[in-house]
Image (cartoon, rainbow, N blue to C red; front, side, top):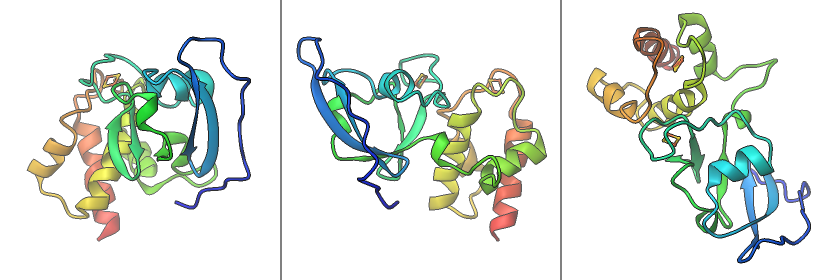
Length: 172
Ligand code: FES
Ligand code: FES
């Protein structure tokens, strides 16, 4: 993803001990944020950058609600600390599709009813996008494995799996 270094968010130097300025890209925009090295990425995204599409639930790497990409790899942003994102490229759900033109994975979730409350959906979509990027025609086992870190309390997963199948069919 191209990085637009013209768009910069700068905050005043922090008053918190140990805080320092981090520079990294979020959805193609270069950002500067003051944070302590151990501030979690999900906190920076949600509270400093107001990118609240990334959800937080378990906070221990079990549910996948906080899934984002770092340099194109799926990660749990609740387990990623500020010092780890320096100079990296982060992609959140806000960087996937637009209201006018949904990403094909978002469209598939919409068409197949791959959500109910929607709380898990941003993380699910980031996980499915990561899967089909690596495996455009995944086996059922590969789908199960890819989504094993993303929990949904509502859907029973049937609609989610239908959405994955639709994406795979559309890609083929
Ligand atoms: S909030 Fe990060 S994995 Fe659950
Ligand atoms: S749609 Fe509610 S948790 Fe998945």
